Image (cartoon, rainbow, N blue to C red; front, side, top):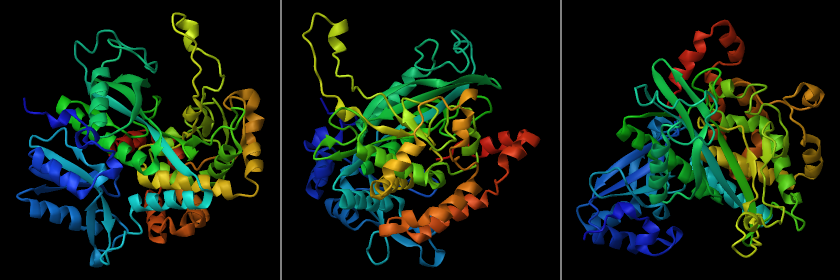
Amino acid sequence: MEMDIRSNTMQALIGKPAAEFTLADITAFVKDNGIGMVNFMYPAADGRLKTLNFVITNEEYLHSILTSGERVDGSSLFPFIEAGSSDLYVIPRLRTAFIDPFAELPTLCFLCSFFDKDGQRLESSPEYTLYKAKKAFTEATGMTYEAMGELEYYVSAPENEQTQMYPAVDQKGYHESAPFAKFNSFRTQCMYYIALIGGKIKYGHSEVGNFRLDGRIYEQNEIEFLPTDVEDAADQLVLAKWVIRNLAYEYGLDTSFAPKITEGKAGSGLHIHMRIMKDGKNMMLDADGKLSETARRAIAGMMTLAPSITAFGNANPTSYFRLVPHQEAPTNICWGDRNRSVLVRVPLGWTTKRDMFSQVNPQDKEMHVDASSKQTVEIRSADCSADIYQLLSALCVACRYGLELPNGLEIADKTYVDVNIHKEENKARVASLDQLPDSCAASADKLAEQRAAYEAKGIFSPAMIDSIIKTLRSYNDADIRREVKQHPELMSEMVSKYYYCG
């Protein structure tokens, strides 16, 4: 029986880790599996993947496109590329190869890197910025930076007789099962496809948000990934959004990664978890199983640069409809343990050293598992308006920055909270905390103030920072919250405009 290559990951089919894929491996795979099409894919400034198609007519042509790449118009992809010198090269990264699960013809896809006219990596390319941030982190600390995302999104469809059965409770959809949750099978199919193309998924579930509006049902979902190399983490998130949208289109469903799609209902974030590794060991915990000095210094860096991190992670005006006081999304610059009212949270980390397994499974012998590798810290401000490569670059820079601060531990102590800061009795503590920006305009101002931290070591190019500031200021949203209160219809207009952001 002919093998269905769509049911296998490239690593399994080639028989080696993706990082070790060679030109010979890819060439042999194309020949042996009847691959007739190759796609080059690359995210542009709007965060969405762009695609360039090739018909493979012979091995010589395949060799040419894989090794020499192709020209693209950079000025149509990025606002910081001048039309007069806009030609760029795109070169495939072989480790990103995957079979397109949606293509009718057998198609092999690659994510690509950008090069300038001189054959140098494009300094202002988001994916190269992340490479530089990762490299600088390791050179400065001797450790590696890993990350993973929680991808939240809404699925919607017209109401019908079936969806009206077993209605879920409004805004109570967290971990809901069918038949009260209507789109669980769609989510699990998305997870399967994401895994096929190389995504490392931790789990998926329905999220809090669910509501009905104007004859449609809306349900919020989440797919969470496993910690991995920060470049791979970015690639996986970009591809996951591409999979979800394509599969939704096939199902006749609608999806949105927008930070806010209606007032009074849960917004969608892009929480980023991170951990710092050295020689295969997680450095987020100390020998006593407590949060380490390394982790607290990294958090101090995020506390210091938090005002400008929103410039990368909250990139259109609707982001600031989500980041409002007294909601679960953060507005105060602080951190805490297992506390969902803070900007940076230290999640529960399996540090009790108690054997929970045998307490409910007495038929098995006691289990004493070292789960220290699971400990991460999570920043909760970002959403999918972000350029994922820029966002992860900024977080990598911030954590390295904190590790280099002489007063990092003092900053960590000052910004730590162990109370629910939304409660009235804790308002004095809230008054002592700095606040996140409340608009794109305010984020642009903070980035202008703190840009030197990102431009240090040549990580973020000045042209990229200038472009981000210019774009953020172009929204003219400095008074957006006041304007929406005076003109409620404005929120609906903006939500509609940015519904398919990212």
